[in-house]
Image 1 (cartoon, rainbow, N blue to C red):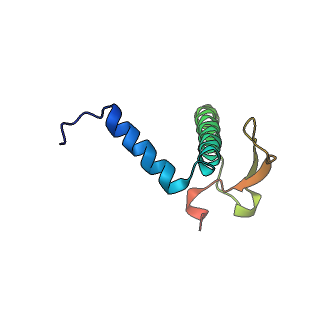
Image 2: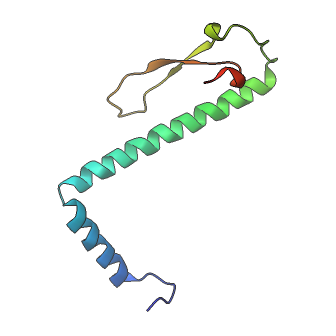
Image 3: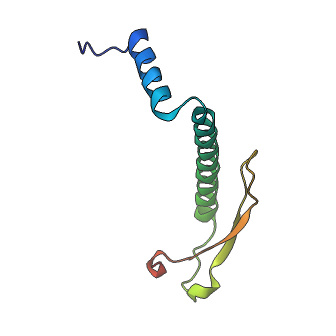
Length: 97
Protein backbone atom coordinates (compact mmCIF):
# COMPACT_ATOMS: atom_id res chain seq x y z
CA UNK A 1 0.00 0.00 0.00
CA UNK A 2 2.80 2.45 0.90
CA UNK A 3 5.36 2.02 -1.85
CA UNK A 4 6.89 5.47 -1.28
CA UNK A 5 5.76 6.96 -4.59
CA UNK A 6 2.78 9.24 -5.07
CA UNK A 7 1.02 8.59 -8.33
CA UNK A 8 -1.92 10.10 -10.15
CA UNK A 9 -4.63 8.22 -8.17
CA UNK A 10 -3.24 9.46 -4.85
CA UNK A 11 -3.02 13.05 -6.07
CA UNK A 12 -6.59 12.92 -7.38
CA UNK A 13 -7.78 11.52 -4.05
CA UNK A 14 -6.01 14.31 -2.14
CA UNK A 15 -7.53 16.98 -4.41
CA UNK A 16 -11.03 15.53 -3.96
CA UNK A 17 -10.63 15.52 -0.17
CA UNK A 18 -9.38 19.14 -0.19
CA UNK A 19 -12.30 20.26 -2.36
CA UNK A 20 -14.76 18.46 -0.08
CA UNK A 21 -13.23 19.97 3.06
CA UNK A 22 -12.87 23.59 1.93
CA UNK A 23 -15.33 23.89 -0.93
CA UNK A 24 -14.63 25.01 -4.48
CA UNK A 25 -15.49 28.64 -3.71
CA UNK A 26 -12.85 29.08 -0.99
CA UNK A 27 -9.94 27.49 -2.87
CA UNK A 28 -9.15 30.54 -5.09
CA UNK A 29 -9.21 32.82 -2.02
CA UNK A 30 -6.89 30.46 -0.15
CA UNK A 31 -4.50 30.31 -3.11
CA UNK A 32 -4.54 34.11 -3.41
CA UNK A 33 -3.77 34.48 0.30
CA UNK A 34 -0.96 31.95 0.06
CA UNK A 35 0.57 33.80 -2.89
CA UNK A 36 0.29 37.14 -1.10
CA UNK A 37 1.99 35.68 1.99
CA UNK A 38 4.77 34.23 -0.15
CA UNK A 39 5.39 37.61 -1.83
CA UNK A 40 5.55 39.36 1.55
CA UNK A 41 7.90 36.73 2.94
CA UNK A 42 10.15 37.00 -0.11
CA UNK A 43 10.30 40.81 0.07
CA UNK A 44 11.05 40.74 3.81
CA UNK A 45 13.81 38.15 3.34
CA UNK A 46 15.31 40.27 0.57
CA UNK A 47 15.15 43.37 2.80
CA UNK A 48 16.80 41.53 5.69
CA UNK A 49 19.55 40.26 3.40
CA UNK A 50 20.25 43.74 2.04
CA UNK A 51 20.17 45.18 5.61
CA UNK A 52 22.71 42.53 6.66
CA UNK A 53 25.09 43.48 3.86
CA UNK A 54 24.69 47.17 4.68
CA UNK A 55 25.32 46.55 8.41
CA UNK A 56 28.56 44.65 7.72
CA UNK A 57 30.04 47.62 5.85
CA UNK A 58 28.85 50.27 8.31
CA UNK A 59 30.34 50.70 11.79
CA UNK A 60 28.25 49.48 14.69
CA UNK A 61 25.98 52.04 16.33
CA UNK A 62 26.77 52.76 19.98
CA UNK A 63 24.08 51.58 22.38
CA UNK A 64 21.85 54.47 23.22
CA UNK A 65 18.37 55.43 24.17
CA UNK A 66 15.87 52.74 23.06
CA UNK A 67 13.33 55.44 22.24
CA UNK A 68 15.73 56.76 19.57
CA UNK A 69 15.45 53.54 17.55
CA UNK A 70 15.80 53.71 13.81
CA UNK A 71 12.64 53.86 11.77
CA UNK A 72 12.32 51.75 8.65
CA UNK A 73 9.46 51.64 6.15
CA UNK A 74 8.19 48.29 4.97
CA UNK A 75 7.04 48.57 1.37
CA UNK A 76 3.93 46.74 0.26
CA UNK A 77 4.41 43.91 -2.22
CA UNK A 78 3.16 44.43 -5.79
CA UNK A 79 -0.53 43.65 -5.92
CA UNK A 80 -0.88 44.15 -2.18
CA UNK A 81 -3.85 46.30 -1.23
CA UNK A 82 -2.33 47.65 1.97
CA UNK A 83 0.00 50.60 1.97
CA UNK A 84 3.52 50.73 3.37
CA UNK A 85 3.82 51.44 7.06
CA UNK A 86 6.65 52.75 9.27
CA UNK A 87 8.12 50.30 11.74
CA UNK A 88 10.22 51.19 14.75
CA UNK A 89 12.97 48.67 15.42
CA UNK A 90 15.27 48.66 18.44
CA UNK A 91 18.97 48.92 17.62
CA UNK A 92 20.03 46.64 20.46
CA UNK A 93 18.55 43.15 20.79
CA UNK A 94 18.83 43.25 24.59
CA UNK A 95 16.31 46.09 24.83
CA UNK A 96 13.49 44.09 23.24
CA UNK A 97 10.67 42.96 25.50
